Length: 460
Image (cartoon, rainbow, N blue to C red; front, side):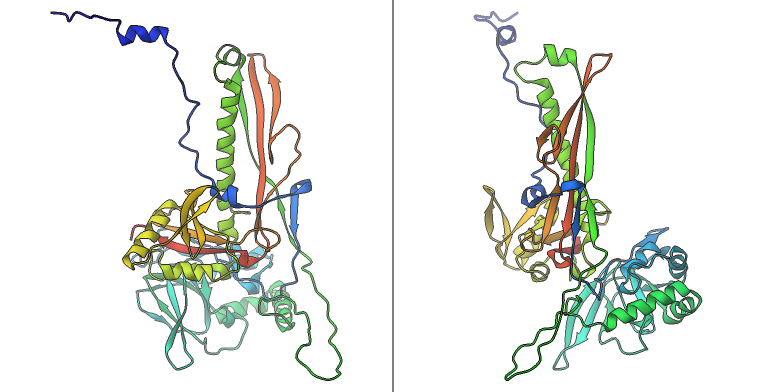
């Protein structure tokens, strides 16, 4: 028997009611802390040149290794090779432009497999770590062992064997994990140098630059006298500059937004259709901008961090000691940047040790801090298939010789700083089109402005 109703039902009543609607939502939107925290510099003319003091000792870089099969110690043969262009990560081959010689050098590398805890003893060759971690241990003042550091994928040691007479390293290299290592014997390098006039001239210039006076940072020295009594002749000096400074050109993220005039005319209340389409398009462009600033192979922060500022975790997950080592590598670190899963791993490691990081307020939001420095989440930092990621630490601003964002303001039809929206007209199908463009780049003013903790395990 049907139930007798005594009042109007809700289904019918809704036909007379006004529905309250939200603006369009998107899961892609993230906090974009990197774009918020970077100080932005106006790059007039679309380019920014970094002038520096002349550097006689170039910073270490990473040597790119490629694999034809997964390079693990369990894989016989490994399939690991050194990328010829990646050899420019060696100070001795920095700016060397003969691709044929680099290719031949890459072919002369030999592959080795090491298990955990093995000592690498041959002193007559350069070693490049294709896969794994190697602990570098030295002798302390009182005869005790002291940990110098941990080297990981793409890092190297023993490069002095290529240009200097045979001698002791001054440290012991011991594998911390199973490793695939590529090595270049001194004789193979010397044989190629004898047959290549271009490489010989390059090595002569390199040796001459090594003999020039320099400060501990490798820059051309500025002679200064201090702490003397009486009258004496003061040294003469000048500040030499790098004659080939790096220039950053602004990159661009663009798209063409299309809205049919029928939609814009008839379905424009209570929300402006063009405005909402444009809002979400700009959000997507800003997300892509932050991703490029981190991951672009040409100017991105992860690919341009100096080799001397890249460190490895000692045990896998991010421990308090790892964060302290990353922090101490530079003055006035403004913030850390980490994947949310790396933040969770850091909290787990801190909890195991009874350490409870403080929180700090940044732009009205409470975030985790380490030693008073905010640790900000950024999901755009890559996660590898093996469950590793990176944590960045940076000093920012031109006054502190840090990391800066680059953009150009005053663009035609500018909608936001560094972003413009240009109306392209209505086509024969009645579709409105807009060209939306964001112009940006990022620059590291001096190498120690940015540090990276690599191979951070999050699933340990």
